Length: 434
Image 1 (cartoon, rainbow, N blue to C red):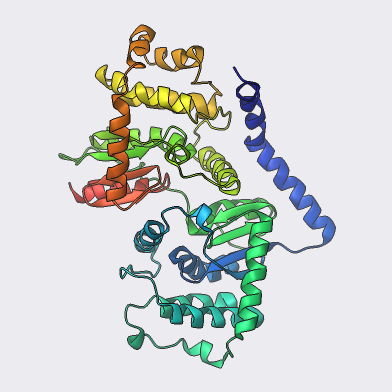
Image 2 (cartoon, rainbow, N blue to C red):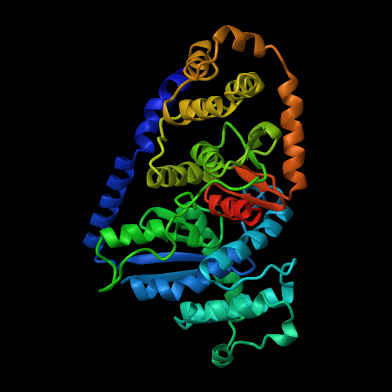
């Protein structure tokens, strides 16, 4: 056992513990009070990002609920290193934003294409001007509505914006360069992001974490209750369906989001009667797609927050990259032969992401195997087989054919969604088929 494998569980258990996060928040609040700063929320808006457009629509409501100062910035798209398969990412973002808009009564329709560059430039010049005038939150949604219209000739330029003089090209270039630098310095890469006192929140999907934090600090206005977009997997009202279609569950053993969604997607299958197919793939880094450190860090911290809300054990990690993942995947067909596929997947994911088990060692993998009722002797034989590689490759091709590349992802009929926070969309797809 390497020193890294030995120490990693102890280090990560502290780093990603809820108590550590709360201690960091308390320290940040102490420093904020000492400096006399108001509650300042940074917002990074990417002009041609659908999620940013949804966030722009939510900002006025957010500002009406909390005593905060908004510091908006217009930023560039993420760098290539943080956005593999960019064309797929862009296309899926529109599809997903349309689903979110429908769910939350916001305004976005996927017309199958991005707005042209000329319109994006005009929007950027106007948005920078609104920031200069201190009026971003008042106008950003209207500018976005104009930008994303299906027919530019039928969507008039927002009336309130006509009084604003667009920022100069030099001002826009300077603003975006400075905003990109600030986002990078603070530790992120995406648009649609909120930042408050050391912590990042992605768009309307993670706004509820920020709201909870502000409410704990007493920063809400009088009469404010509840959350704007609370987390809801849609499992509370799941019930048996008549002949539901299968759920294809694309996952990776090295994906923390896969780890915290696996028990929930299996619960959804059990509650509705839908069969969940295990469509495992190799981790991105093992497929030649390295993930930047800043992205890895954010994902694990975000997973820890999401796991806490859903009461799922997480945080004592033993990175299964390489040999541990390969050994785990080799045993999925063996587990399925004994009607224990889901149980083994859960045991493995919980083992490496919540218990710090070294799945690369016989001792660790034996524990993962035997606690779901499988025989270690049979597992040792199964580890000699390589047929799982063809299956993983076929699953990857199926994922790409569906227009996606990352996990966890789900396919129900013609519905394809990506993300551990999209089970409501999977459930909706199942109910439509009933």
